[in-house]
Length: 241
Image 1 (cartoon, rainbow, N blue to C red):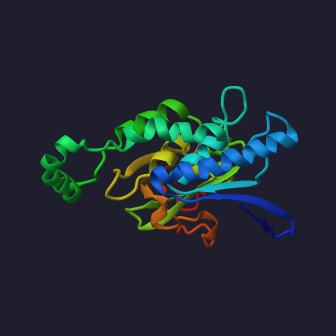
Image 2: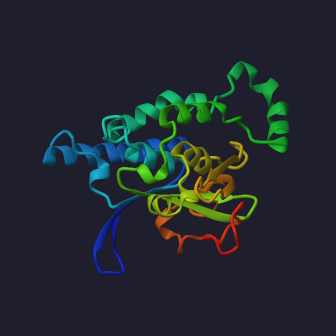
């Protein structure tokens, strides 16, 4: 957690959540404790998203960021901080299935082959899970501002998704489900994620080929600027921005 001065001199509060796979239970534990203390002060409805101007997270930190800031049907956060660890304990073994001891020896060769040819895990469970939970909610709809880094392996540059960008540029207003899959797609462990955004007014489209944001920034607030060059936009006139 930190405070930082904006250009106008106003202090803002920033919550930064690093990546680390299943180690998301560590920030989950800390955030559950913090939220419980805030509830002692301000009542049981207090949530982390109410106290931070920006929540930033990479990889598993991006998943936690989304859980804390995505709106549910009642208008509150998708999940309370106290439930983050239960999420990891329930779904972690299915996202990263382990080899049983009895089959370990037989699986050594095939595991080596898989690592040479592609990611260790197919990512199907994670993709199905976040799509089911988040549906078509987009990044501009978060309860507070978020910053979630990814890395485009085709353009070889970071792509930073944020609430601000999502509101200002429809081609950056990706679904939170796609952003979660992308920022957590650790190379050699999970496959890259392809997504496409469209501007129905101009007819422009933008494509992304994304992997884990930790390739560029495991600690999001340390990013200088937005880290992006101007991307090609299909179906858009040269001066049609």
